[in-house]
Image 1: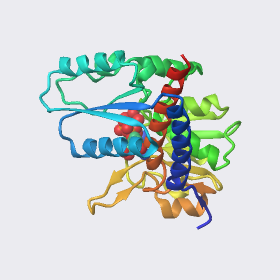
Image 2: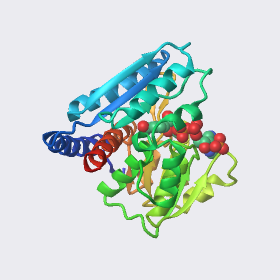
Image 3: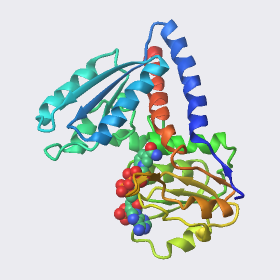
Image 4: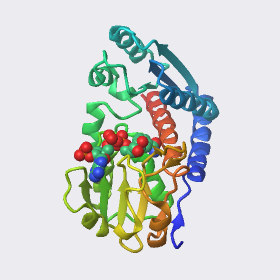
Length: 284
Ligand code: NDP
Protein backbone atom coordinates (compact mmCIF):
# COMPACT_ATOMS: atom_id res chain seq x y z
CA UNK A 1 0.00 0.00 0.00
CA UNK A 2 1.35 3.42 -0.89
CA UNK A 3 -1.47 5.82 0.03
CA UNK A 4 -1.48 7.90 3.18
CA UNK A 5 -4.71 7.42 5.12
CA UNK A 6 -6.77 10.47 5.96
CA UNK A 7 -8.17 9.65 9.39
CA UNK A 8 -11.64 11.17 9.64
CA UNK A 9 -12.07 10.11 13.23
CA UNK A 10 -8.96 11.97 14.37
CA UNK A 11 -9.80 15.06 12.29
CA UNK A 12 -13.39 15.05 13.59
CA UNK A 13 -12.14 14.85 17.16
CA UNK A 14 -9.77 17.77 16.60
CA UNK A 15 -12.52 19.90 15.03
CA UNK A 16 -15.01 18.99 17.80
CA UNK A 17 -12.52 20.04 20.49
CA UNK A 18 -12.27 23.45 18.84
CA UNK A 19 -16.08 23.64 18.59
CA UNK A 20 -16.41 22.82 22.30
CA UNK A 21 -13.87 25.55 23.17
CA UNK A 22 -15.69 28.12 21.01
CA UNK A 23 -19.04 27.04 22.49
CA UNK A 24 -17.67 27.52 26.01
CA UNK A 25 -16.54 31.03 25.11
CA UNK A 26 -19.98 31.84 23.69
CA UNK A 27 -21.72 30.39 26.76
CA UNK A 28 -19.53 32.61 28.96
CA UNK A 29 -20.99 35.55 27.01
CA UNK A 30 -24.54 34.33 27.66
CA UNK A 31 -25.44 32.33 24.53
CA UNK A 32 -25.60 28.53 24.64
CA UNK A 33 -25.78 26.97 21.15
CA UNK A 34 -28.99 24.95 20.82
CA UNK A 35 -29.99 22.39 18.20
CA UNK A 36 -33.57 21.13 17.87
CA UNK A 37 -33.98 17.76 16.17
CA UNK A 38 -37.28 16.42 14.84
CA UNK A 39 -37.72 12.70 14.26
CA UNK A 40 -40.85 11.25 12.67
CA UNK A 41 -41.48 7.49 12.66
CA UNK A 42 -39.34 4.65 13.90
CA UNK A 43 -36.74 4.00 11.20
CA UNK A 44 -33.89 2.37 13.17
CA UNK A 45 -31.10 4.06 11.19
CA UNK A 46 -32.74 7.49 11.67
CA UNK A 47 -33.05 6.86 15.42
CA UNK A 48 -29.33 6.06 15.62
CA UNK A 49 -28.42 9.22 13.65
CA UNK A 50 -30.61 11.37 15.91
CA UNK A 51 -29.15 9.78 19.04
CA UNK A 52 -25.61 10.49 17.77
CA UNK A 53 -26.49 14.09 16.92
CA UNK A 54 -27.95 14.70 20.38
CA UNK A 55 -24.93 13.04 22.02
CA UNK A 56 -22.60 15.18 19.88
CA UNK A 57 -24.41 18.32 21.10
CA UNK A 58 -24.10 17.34 24.73
CA UNK A 59 -20.40 16.58 24.40
CA UNK A 60 -19.77 19.97 22.80
CA UNK A 61 -21.64 21.77 25.59
CA UNK A 62 -24.69 22.60 23.43
CA UNK A 63 -28.30 22.40 24.51
CA UNK A 64 -30.32 19.94 22.44
CA UNK A 65 -34.05 19.47 22.04
CA UNK A 66 -35.58 16.34 20.59
CA UNK A 67 -39.15 16.10 19.26
CA UNK A 68 -40.43 12.67 18.27
CA UNK A 69 -43.62 11.91 16.35
CA UNK A 70 -45.34 8.65 15.38
CA UNK A 71 -44.99 7.40 11.80
CA UNK A 72 -48.64 8.36 11.10
CA UNK A 73 -48.26 11.92 12.44
CA UNK A 74 -50.17 14.72 10.71
CA UNK A 75 -47.70 16.84 8.69
CA UNK A 76 -49.32 20.01 10.06
CA UNK A 77 -48.29 19.07 13.61
CA UNK A 78 -44.64 18.98 12.52
CA UNK A 79 -45.00 22.20 10.52
CA UNK A 80 -46.46 23.88 13.62
CA UNK A 81 -43.50 22.71 15.71
CA UNK A 82 -41.08 24.09 13.10
CA UNK A 83 -42.90 27.46 13.20
CA UNK A 84 -42.62 27.48 17.00
CA UNK A 85 -38.88 26.69 16.85
CA UNK A 86 -38.34 29.33 14.13
CA UNK A 87 -39.80 31.92 16.51
CA UNK A 88 -37.77 30.76 19.54
CA UNK A 89 -34.63 32.92 19.76
CA UNK A 90 -32.92 30.42 22.07
CA UNK A 91 -32.92 27.79 19.26
CA UNK A 92 -30.12 28.22 16.72
CA UNK A 93 -30.43 25.11 14.58
CA UNK A 94 -33.44 23.07 13.43
CA UNK A 95 -32.98 19.70 11.82
CA UNK A 96 -35.65 17.36 10.49
CA UNK A 97 -34.28 13.84 10.18
CA UNK A 98 -34.90 12.41 6.71
CA UNK A 99 -36.51 10.36 5.27
CA UNK A 100 -40.01 11.35 6.33
CA UNK A 101 -43.05 9.05 6.06
CA UNK A 102 -44.96 9.16 2.73
CA UNK A 103 -47.74 11.53 3.90
CA UNK A 104 -45.08 14.29 4.18
CA UNK A 105 -43.92 16.57 1.40
CA UNK A 106 -40.21 16.65 2.30
CA UNK A 107 -39.48 19.78 0.30
CA UNK A 108 -42.33 21.64 2.01
CA UNK A 109 -41.03 20.60 5.44
CA UNK A 110 -37.46 21.66 4.66
CA UNK A 111 -38.69 24.96 3.23
CA UNK A 112 -40.65 25.64 6.43
CA UNK A 113 -37.40 25.90 8.40
CA UNK A 114 -36.03 29.43 8.79
CA UNK A 115 -33.03 29.45 6.39
CA UNK A 116 -30.97 31.12 9.13
CA UNK A 117 -31.57 28.07 11.38
CA UNK A 118 -31.25 25.47 8.59
CA UNK A 119 -28.03 23.90 9.88
CA UNK A 120 -28.36 20.95 7.47
CA UNK A 121 -28.07 23.42 4.59
CA UNK A 122 -30.89 21.79 2.59
CA UNK A 123 -33.20 24.81 2.31
CA UNK A 124 -33.37 26.20 -1.24
CA UNK A 125 -32.21 29.59 0.08
CA UNK A 126 -29.02 28.03 1.46
CA UNK A 127 -28.50 26.02 -1.73
CA UNK A 128 -28.72 29.31 -3.64
CA UNK A 129 -26.32 31.01 -1.24
CA UNK A 130 -23.84 28.16 -1.70
CA UNK A 131 -24.12 28.42 -5.48
CA UNK A 132 -23.48 32.18 -5.33
CA UNK A 133 -20.63 31.88 -2.80
CA UNK A 134 -22.56 33.78 -0.13
CA UNK A 135 -22.67 33.21 3.61
CA UNK A 136 -25.22 30.60 4.68
CA UNK A 137 -25.11 27.01 5.86
CA UNK A 138 -23.38 24.40 3.76
CA UNK A 139 -24.53 20.74 3.73
CA UNK A 140 -22.59 18.86 6.37
CA UNK A 141 -21.22 15.86 4.44
CA UNK A 142 -19.56 17.71 1.52
CA UNK A 143 -18.52 20.50 3.92
CA UNK A 144 -16.83 17.80 6.00
CA UNK A 145 -15.02 16.53 2.91
CA UNK A 146 -13.67 20.03 2.26
CA UNK A 147 -12.49 20.23 5.86
CA UNK A 148 -10.72 16.88 5.49
CA UNK A 149 -9.00 18.00 2.30
CA UNK A 150 -7.85 21.16 4.07
CA UNK A 151 -6.51 19.31 7.09
CA UNK A 152 -4.89 16.75 4.77
CA UNK A 153 -3.04 19.59 3.01
CA UNK A 154 -4.64 18.83 -0.36
CA UNK A 155 -4.36 21.65 -2.88
CA UNK A 156 -7.71 22.02 -4.67
CA UNK A 157 -7.09 25.02 -6.90
CA UNK A 158 -6.29 24.08 -10.48
CA UNK A 159 -6.88 20.38 -9.87
CA UNK A 160 -9.14 18.10 -11.91
CA UNK A 161 -11.83 16.77 -9.58
CA UNK A 162 -14.40 14.10 -10.33
CA UNK A 163 -17.47 13.77 -8.14
CA UNK A 164 -19.38 10.53 -8.65
CA UNK A 165 -23.00 11.10 -7.63
CA UNK A 166 -25.30 14.10 -8.11
CA UNK A 167 -27.63 13.98 -5.12
CA UNK A 168 -28.81 17.19 -3.48
CA UNK A 169 -27.22 16.27 -0.17
CA UNK A 170 -23.78 15.13 -1.35
CA UNK A 171 -22.83 15.16 -5.04
CA UNK A 172 -24.20 18.52 -6.21
CA UNK A 173 -23.07 20.65 -3.24
CA UNK A 174 -19.71 18.83 -3.29
CA UNK A 175 -19.19 19.83 -6.91
CA UNK A 176 -20.09 23.47 -6.15
CA UNK A 177 -17.71 23.61 -3.16
CA UNK A 178 -14.82 22.24 -5.22
CA UNK A 179 -15.62 24.66 -8.05
CA UNK A 180 -15.61 27.56 -5.57
CA UNK A 181 -12.09 26.53 -4.55
CA UNK A 182 -10.79 26.59 -8.10
CA UNK A 183 -11.00 22.94 -9.14
CA UNK A 184 -12.10 21.92 -12.62
CA UNK A 185 -15.04 19.72 -11.73
CA UNK A 186 -16.68 16.83 -13.57
CA UNK A 187 -19.83 15.29 -12.08
CA UNK A 188 -20.49 11.66 -13.03
CA UNK A 189 -23.77 9.79 -12.47
CA UNK A 190 -25.72 6.81 -13.68
CA UNK A 191 -26.09 8.21 -17.22
CA UNK A 192 -22.39 9.05 -17.63
CA UNK A 193 -20.65 7.37 -20.55
CA UNK A 194 -17.10 6.17 -19.89
CA UNK A 195 -17.13 6.93 -16.17
CA UNK A 196 -13.80 5.15 -15.73
CA UNK A 197 -12.24 7.45 -18.35
CA UNK A 198 -13.34 10.53 -16.39
CA UNK A 199 -12.12 9.10 -13.09
CA UNK A 200 -8.74 8.21 -14.61
CA UNK A 201 -8.05 11.88 -15.41
CA UNK A 202 -8.89 13.10 -11.90
CA UNK A 203 -6.44 14.40 -9.31
CA UNK A 204 -9.24 14.31 -6.72
CA UNK A 205 -11.98 11.66 -6.76
CA UNK A 206 -15.03 11.94 -4.53
CA UNK A 207 -17.19 8.81 -4.54
CA UNK A 208 -20.80 9.31 -3.38
CA UNK A 209 -22.58 6.54 -5.24
CA UNK A 210 -23.94 4.12 -2.66
CA UNK A 211 -22.46 1.03 -4.32
CA UNK A 212 -19.86 -1.16 -2.62
CA UNK A 213 -16.43 -1.28 -4.28
CA UNK A 214 -17.60 0.84 -7.23
CA UNK A 215 -14.25 2.62 -7.69
CA UNK A 216 -11.30 0.28 -8.13
CA UNK A 217 -7.57 0.96 -8.20
CA UNK A 218 -7.30 0.38 -11.95
CA UNK A 219 -9.66 3.35 -12.54
CA UNK A 220 -7.41 5.81 -10.73
CA UNK A 221 -4.64 8.11 -11.86
CA UNK A 222 -1.48 7.32 -9.88
CA UNK A 223 -1.22 9.70 -6.93
CA UNK A 224 -4.91 10.65 -6.93
CA UNK A 225 -6.60 11.79 -3.72
CA UNK A 226 -9.59 9.53 -3.08
CA UNK A 227 -12.43 10.49 -0.75
CA UNK A 228 -14.99 7.77 -0.12
CA UNK A 229 -18.35 9.15 1.03
CA UNK A 230 -20.24 5.89 0.54
CA UNK A 231 -21.63 3.93 3.45
CA UNK A 232 -22.86 0.50 2.37
CA UNK A 233 -23.84 -2.44 4.53
CA UNK A 234 -22.76 -5.78 3.11
CA UNK A 235 -24.89 -8.92 3.65
CA UNK A 236 -22.31 -9.91 6.30
CA UNK A 237 -23.32 -6.80 8.26
CA UNK A 238 -19.93 -5.19 7.64
CA UNK A 239 -19.78 -1.56 6.52
CA UNK A 240 -17.91 -0.64 3.37
CA UNK A 241 -17.52 2.40 1.16
CA UNK A 242 -17.88 2.97 -2.57
CA UNK A 243 -14.15 2.49 -3.12
CA UNK A 244 -12.36 -0.84 -3.19
CA UNK A 245 -9.92 0.21 -0.52
CA UNK A 246 -7.10 -2.32 -1.03
CA UNK A 247 -6.65 -1.80 -4.77
CA UNK A 248 -7.25 1.98 -4.58
CA UNK A 249 -4.72 2.43 -1.78
CA UNK A 250 -2.05 0.91 -4.05
CA UNK A 251 -2.49 3.72 -6.58
CA UNK A 252 -3.75 6.74 -4.61
CA UNK A 253 -1.57 9.15 -2.65
CA UNK A 254 -4.22 9.86 -0.02
CA UNK A 255 -7.38 7.91 0.79
CA UNK A 256 -10.18 7.87 3.35
CA UNK A 257 -11.24 4.59 4.97
CA UNK A 258 -14.82 3.43 5.65
CA UNK A 259 -15.69 3.41 8.46
CA UNK A 260 -13.60 6.16 10.08
CA UNK A 261 -13.35 8.49 7.09
CA UNK A 262 -16.00 10.97 6.00
CA UNK A 263 -18.66 9.50 8.33
CA UNK A 264 -17.43 11.09 11.60
CA UNK A 265 -17.16 14.48 9.86
CA UNK A 266 -20.86 14.84 9.05
CA UNK A 267 -22.14 15.33 12.62
CA UNK A 268 -19.03 17.38 13.37
CA UNK A 269 -19.96 19.87 10.66
CA UNK A 270 -23.56 19.90 11.90
CA UNK A 271 -22.22 20.99 15.29
CA UNK A 272 -20.03 23.53 13.51
CA UNK A 273 -23.05 24.97 11.67
CA UNK A 274 -25.07 25.15 14.91
CA UNK A 275 -22.21 26.98 16.62
CA UNK A 276 -21.95 29.35 13.65
CA UNK A 277 -25.67 30.07 13.88
CA UNK A 278 -25.39 30.78 17.61
CA UNK A 279 -22.39 33.06 17.00
CA UNK A 280 -24.35 34.97 14.34
CA UNK A 281 -27.35 35.26 16.70
CA UNK A 282 -25.11 36.56 19.50
CA UNK A 283 -23.70 39.23 17.18
CA UNK A 284 -27.09 40.31 15.81
P1 NDP B 1 -28.17 8.89 -3.75
O1 NDP B 1 -28.68 7.51 -3.94
O2 NDP B 1 -29.12 10.01 -3.53
O3 NDP B 1 -27.27 9.27 -5.03
C1 NDP B 1 -26.40 8.36 -5.60
C2 NDP B 1 -25.79 8.95 -6.84
O4 NDP B 1 -24.95 7.97 -7.41
C3 NDP B 1 -26.82 9.35 -7.88
O5 NDP B 1 -26.50 10.62 -8.41
C4 NDP B 1 -26.70 8.27 -8.94
O6 NDP B 1 -26.89 8.72 -10.27
C5 NDP B 1 -25.26 7.83 -8.79
N1 NDP B 1 -25.13 6.45 -9.21
C6 NDP B 1 -25.80 5.37 -8.75
N2 NDP B 1 -25.41 4.26 -9.42
C7 NDP B 1 -24.48 4.66 -10.30
C8 NDP B 1 -23.73 3.99 -11.29
N3 NDP B 1 -23.85 2.67 -11.49
N4 NDP B 1 -22.87 4.71 -12.03
C9 NDP B 1 -22.73 6.03 -11.84
N5 NDP B 1 -23.42 6.73 -10.92
C10 NDP B 1 -24.30 6.04 -10.19
O7 NDP B 1 -27.11 8.81 -2.57
P2 NDP B 1 -26.50 9.94 -1.61
O8 NDP B 1 -25.85 10.99 -2.41
O9 NDP B 1 -27.48 10.30 -0.59
O10 NDP B 1 -25.37 9.07 -0.87
C11 NDP B 1 -24.31 8.49 -1.57
C12 NDP B 1 -23.54 7.58 -0.64
O11 NDP B 1 -23.02 8.35 0.41
C13 NDP B 1 -24.41 6.49 0.04
O12 NDP B 1 -23.60 5.35 0.23
C14 NDP B 1 -24.74 7.10 1.38
O13 NDP B 1 -24.97 6.11 2.35
C15 NDP B 1 -23.46 7.85 1.66
N6 NDP B 1 -23.64 8.98 2.56
C16 NDP B 1 -22.74 9.13 3.55
C17 NDP B 1 -22.82 10.16 4.43
C18 NDP B 1 -21.78 10.30 5.47
O14 NDP B 1 -22.03 10.86 6.51
N7 NDP B 1 -20.57 9.82 5.22
C19 NDP B 1 -23.92 11.13 4.39
C20 NDP B 1 -24.77 10.97 3.23
C21 NDP B 1 -24.64 9.92 2.37
P3 NDP B 1 -28.31 9.26 -10.83
O15 NDP B 1 -28.48 10.61 -10.22
O16 NDP B 1 -28.13 9.30 -12.29
O17 NDP B 1 -29.34 8.28 -10.36
